[in-house]
Amino acid sequence: MLVIGVGGLELSGEERGWLQDPRVSGVILFKRNFASRAQAGELCQAIREAAPRPQLLCVDQEGGRVQRFREGYSELPALEGFGHLYATDRQAALALAREHAWLMASEILATGLDLSFAPVVDLGRGNLAIGNRAFHAEPGIVADFCRAYVAGLHEAGMAATIKHFPGHGSVLEDTHFDDAVDPRPLADLQALDLVPFAAGIGAGAEAVMMAHVKYPAVAPEPAGYSPRWIRDILRRDMGFAGIVFSDDIGMAAAESAGGVKARIDAHLDAGCDAVLVCAPALVADSLRAVADRDPAPAGLLAPLFARRSPDWDTLLANARYDGAREALRRLDHGVA
Image (tube, rainbow, N blue to C red; front, side, top):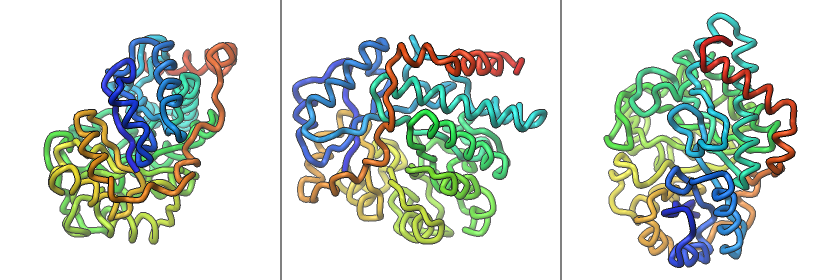
């Protein structure tokens, strides 16, 4: 099962062909796919009409520097700001995080997508890729925020995806560009980085996205294609029964598995349910790589589809919408 990227503001003929393949079950959109709210909605509709099966439409709309859709959307603050507020007003910080989740999810659902890959529950401990995308450095505090954020997503009608399992925040390297190795034993990870993931699972998060980080004291391969991490620790020990996504196989840290086919095979064989192929340049090779595999069972991703799809007029008329926007604006300006 692949979730693929497309190249521009409209579907090309080649991309329409990709969507005919039964092994494509979703599309992830990026800034390159966005010109306006109306155009994004039209692209979503075109994807759904071009595919013979329901497609999971996804985006990374975390807030801060990772916000793919901007013009016509609320300016969402980075998660780190909630952590700063937590030190002086815990309840206000958690309530605002819940509103952030509801607001973000409501706008994405109104556009016609199903899912934003959120929240980040990595610890804020200096990783170059995570930075201010993390709520806080302390696992118990991140766990509190995770529960609040999952609740806000669910109130909007969106499933939650907690990432990047088992924790990307405690290594320095950015796995988009470099390999990352965390030498700590499992007991240390369980006491720290895994705490927010346990909270998210307990709160009903429907999906987990894996990290491309290697934890050699636990398993020899990066977590994203490690049976030990996915089958033994995440599913058996932590009781997670939802959907497992790989991170993007185009990232540098995924290349340790080999070429495109080797990367996809490694992730699927280890227990990932869906593999992200974000770069359109890799999609054709990825489809050839899975040609000998049976399509995923029908309905596997059903728990992740939008539970409601508000239209923009209804959303803009909702009093909670203006209240959430104002509260988050105040947080972003340091006056919450």
